Length: 175
Image (cartoon, rainbow, N blue to C red; front, top):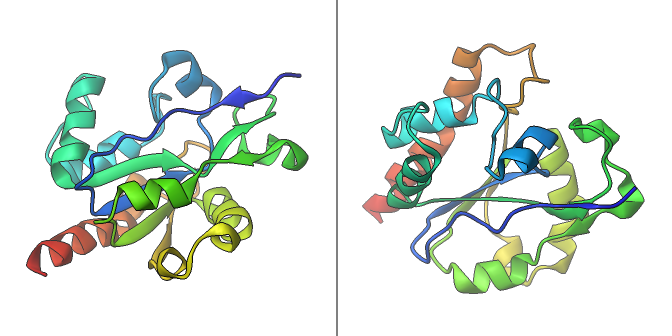
């Protein structure tokens, strides 16, 4: 089986927070859009933060993230994964993105928010050991996965959990 490759980051040089998923699922890869599965609540949650409705076109949602200072990327650059579940990712096939380069180009990043357990696990295991001291010290916050596979939490619970990101953005504006 051939490896799937993820997307370049959604970002501007002035981004203040970074949201990391694990790797785009099959539907996202087919759509060529981050969080393309209609049951993934990422865009609904971001709509609450950026004031850009999830029903807007993809470009408008991306522009909303950029205006709000939110960068989006994935920990994994490429991997073999039959299907869309993170549990199906073949561990020995994982190739991570170049975070040291990203952080050098995005000096305003104040915190990293990890969308679910697999993103957190792979970031801590494969990315943190490769970073310089300055970047290792960035605060990291694991959030509830917005994936439809994480059905034990309601949208309201996920939204409330993700408001930590909104608080971080507001705090970064005051500094």
